[in-house]
Length: 612
Ligand code: G6P
Image 1 (spheres, rainbow, N blue to C red):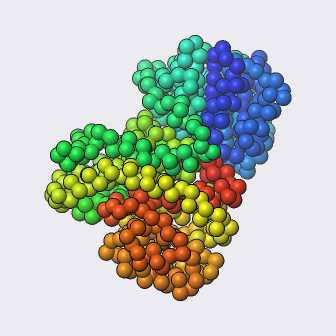
Image 2 (cartoon, helix red, strand yellow):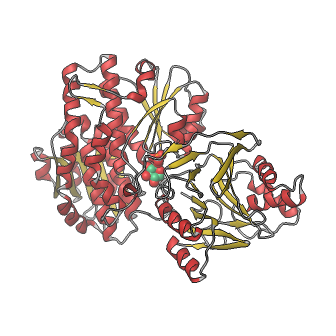
Image 3 (cartoon, protein in one colour):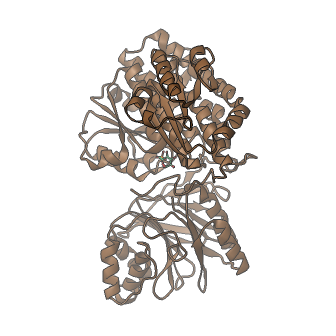
């Protein structure tokens, strides 16, 4: 979703900003723009890619030493040149870039129009620039910083903002409420960004702003304070992110790179946590809360998108291994219905980015009601990771492709480890089976590698289905969430309509859609439901649906019934989602590439959804 970058120092700011905006492209956007202070403000912005912006900047030969940039993902007002950020105040002296949503913008805009201000865009952001200027010129203060603070106090909603004022050509002001923002500290230069990716090649020293905080940034210096003007001393964090990790390393797309990274990302996630000598699981982040988790009255899992699918796998795992009742909630639904959760309950939130607005809100709601809140996050230092009571990092490394792949498998690995550890402590998991699962977890990276060796045949198969108008994905038990995830991957990046269904439930609706044009992907683990799955396959075949089966080599019955077959090494049924999902990721990837889709930045989608 929208991205912010800012620079102040001796480098050419337009180069740093354009490069930073390119690093932020993965978040998803529809327009881009920047403002440079050169006595006056130079503004370049417009609908479309950062590449277009770069061409405009180059053709105008724009340079500078201080500036702010933005990638926009439209919320208020369609994606067009006028609605792109930065937005200017009436005088053209103040420019603002903004992530988030101003909820009371209608009322503020009406008042500002009555005060004689003219608006040009349909955005909520333009009111920020106009409101600051109204206070600065005609209000209770002529100090810019105070005017900014007063304006922020009138704003209801969420924001991460960067503001420049041509009257103060050596400063960038930033403020945060709800949308992430960090400062990068360089040698006599400062960086601003909505995540670490634009900063990491220049400095590893960062400061994370918290809600209600702002900063005045000058060349080589910064002052952080609350918007009530209380000066703060902030901890400086060392970024663990490396530049290599956010580059494509020879792959045509980040998504393919990330799919192929899974043997390593799963191994990284397991590292130091599996004790093969005594068959236990070590999760340092949960040590202090393990008793509360083991004795929880209820365990609720909340997440969005792919993370919600991993939560569903988690539900099956916790119920199977730890015999704990679990509910899995869409974070957005959970938070808005006054959920019944309180002391003695545990809410576990799952988020790759650690910034998803709905997940964050669900977490805060449960925390306010007294529940213990645990997090499974990928991005170290993200808001959710910081605000949860305890948690486990997935250690999958940066995920840049909008469609989540390696984060999903790492989340499922973490949930499996937690479920085993809880099962062991609750006495619901016998030692022999726990040992078998731990040994098998350790073998998974090798098994994922074996599946990736089928890359070429999956690529060939994808050619046959490139123009299918619809897809159906069926799964049972642990692999029902994989069916949902397979369908989500396909629709996200190829724009083919796809539905995931519990295989038996197909008879209650989707079967009406099956004909000779319908590919049906069957994710068939060889568990006690295999016979039932075979009946479902027969039902599809009877209606001429085309079966693509993902199952074990030994599952000969399913193999013989299927038109296409992708083989998975044998594993424990409860671990099979970690294998069955891999070919589904590859299939979606190649279909999307064949259709000429923008795989890493699919239309309308954002990597990190920081608005509700
Ligand atoms: C967006 C992304 C998905 C992701 C979801 C939840 O929709 O495009 O890939 O699964 O947000 O994000 P989170 O960062 O909370 O896991």
